[in-house]
Length: 214
Length: 212
Picture 1: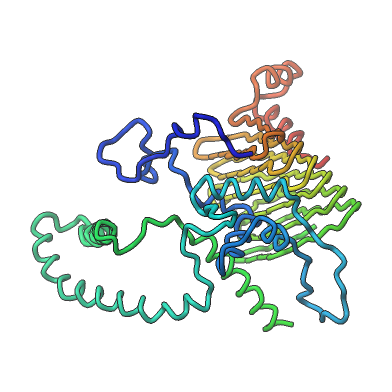
Picture 2: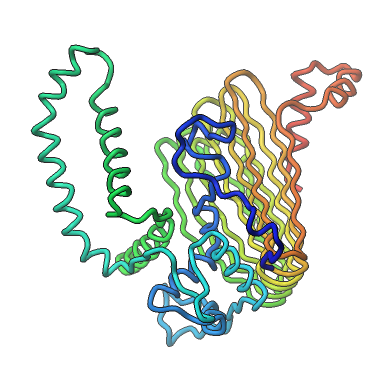
């Protein structure tokens, strides 16, 4: 159930930028240890399904409830040969709990009794369209890096010839780029959506494998 | 029982979906033997959906021979009044052995119950990592994660990461874990019967990892 006490306003949400090392700093991830992490929320298939359901347009609780149910699809035999009689329907209470968790972590929000996404989630078709722009971006960066590489090595080689300074420099540059893009409001500070992508990818690969082998 | 006695560079993958209907009693047991060369890579992924009033038991044993590299991920979704029992036993015996298992139970239906029991040992540089995840998403559900791991010899490592989440206020989820060596009292009792410490430890490991 959703917490409706006065403590709701006081709950601690960790900062993203860490200027000083604090007791709550996690050295492995370089983030506050209690930073809300999206991956654990997306461990659960139902919550992943809810996010995918909301990609098209915002939906009411009743609509989500009706969509979160499934029957196993026959993959190795034809539909005519086998009629599945199993159907898994999630209860209203558990759907409420899942929506509450997603809302708590700001992945969705309730607006006029409809739940909508707070993060961009692309269906695979849209991602394919984006591909050529991604290539354009990276090719430009690679050209710049190639041009500068020799100059950089010449300069840095004098400092320490043995240390792998070049990879460190590249990593630093990527991080700095991300930071500058954020500062310029060119990218939103979005949570990790890779898990969802992996979910779709796994499905596609599995269906490809079925089509190829059977 | 899956036997690969001469495994060398063997890769065994699985992507499985189990759909268990209502009022069923289903037991899935896997016992592996990968030979003595640590030459196997086993990486199965399983999604199990357990229907109303059903009982699902999952048994995975990898205690004989050398496991090699094992990466198992199982997600179990438990519907109303279902009961889940998951027993996992693994033994990493040398530096090449790495056993990583993630066993998740999502209690999605009212009064669903689950127990995850993970028992492992690592010796002579072996590595074992166990994730036991239980999530109470429905009213009156009840889950428990238990993890016992024994470390033998320097360089071996055992890790346990129980993640328990109670999302519904009427759910109840618990965990207990013990890692490291056996209690001294147990060893002393066996030593009093004339066994050496190594023999006593061996007997206790066999007792811990034996199939029920």
